[in-house]
Amino acid sequence: MRLITHNMLSCNIKGVTNGYPLGIEASRLETKESELNPEFLRKIFPKLEWKALRDAAHSLGLNDLPEHVEPSMLEDADFLKNFHHALLEVHLEEGALICPETGRRFPVTKGVPNMLLNEDEV
Image 1: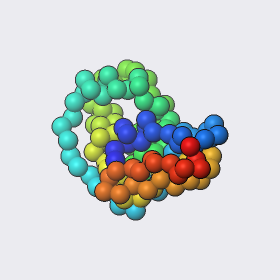
Image 2: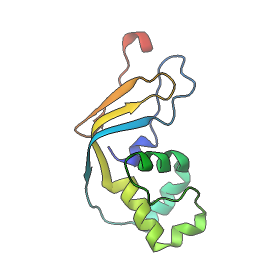
Image 3: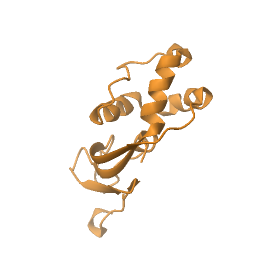
């Protein structure tokens, strides 16, 4: 699972009002190189919650993303490289996503998060 996916997931348990962003507990990460596409990064940037992305990256040991971002930074090659790496190249292969309100753990196996709810959670 890439951090682009993580940035768009939330806990949907009945009654949860603070299900975003999910915490990450990683037991295995992989880095899979992909071609840098600056135009894609510029287009996806406004759709992302930057603080959630930065905090998720930081929890995985990726400390190259700045705390605050200005749109002009999307023209900086070094920033784009670090943004691309965190967003698209680092994959959570094994671990869990954790609801910030309930602590409910959603397992990630072979890179796929299992967000299915139990019957009593729907």
